[in-house]
Length: 124
Image: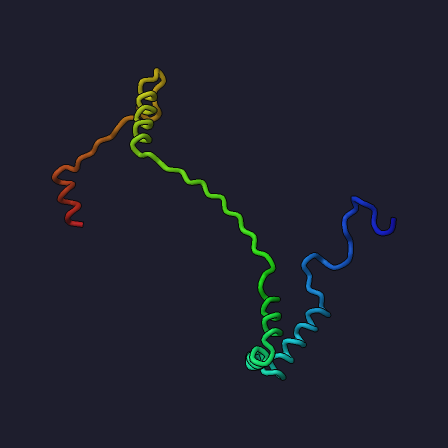
């Protein structure tokens, strides 16, 4: 077996996703000829009128071969009246328990402004 043994990390070579410079150079040259020498869109219009089959074959190469999509949708209806009944039952269970519900033992501080405080807030 030639090459590196199985299990050893890859060293050297082209990195995944890198652009080959010769391919890029060829594409750039074709693009330059198309736009500068042939006229770009005007050239494509001329081809479309003269050789419709060629133009359609070029167009077909731009369209993806296959489009695959999966869509999983769960449709869940909510009965609000039943949800309220269930919530009320759960609250009743919490408050009927021998264990205190959270925050029921906290001190409530009530504050109503006195006439002097009410006048001060108007002056500000």
